[in-house]
Length: 194
Image (cartoon, rainbow, N blue to C red; front, side, top):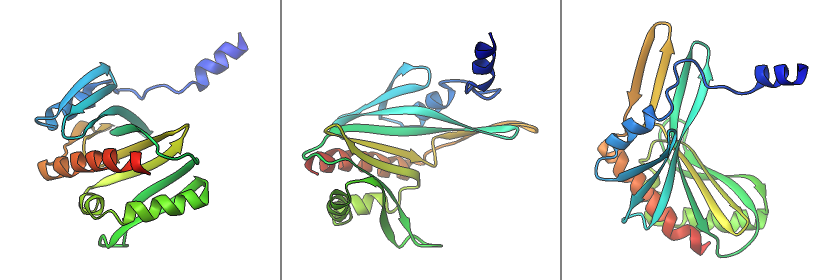
């Protein structure tokens, strides 16, 4: 009985006012011509022939004091050409203005990281698409013969405050939508060759 009570009290639960699927519904309308199919209330799939692959989209909830933020995370799973587990993050370089892209090693094979970093940073099309993209987090992980890409855009998110009570959806602008789809498509082409 004590264990059940402890598990119930410590289990992660959604913040008050969180509506599963509401942010994905707004994102679906925001993506325009790109078709999103909802699989569950908080998870969907983007089928875009221009991508050449299917991207999964899911809601991520981050609770704060008297508020929460719901962001949408885009995920790709692609076959890897070679083995060697590695995890890295990509981010913009520059303190005030974007001056380039940086790859940050997180864990795994360092030689594989160096090889992947060089190939990604030397891909001019990918760099051109990533530079103007407003992303919060971009993680690449190679494991079990597959690449797992996770991209969290700053748009396509919802801020919900309880006091004062308000909800605000931050949309992805048409230029950002074009950059996002271009990035997903370019990663879909380049990652299977790494």
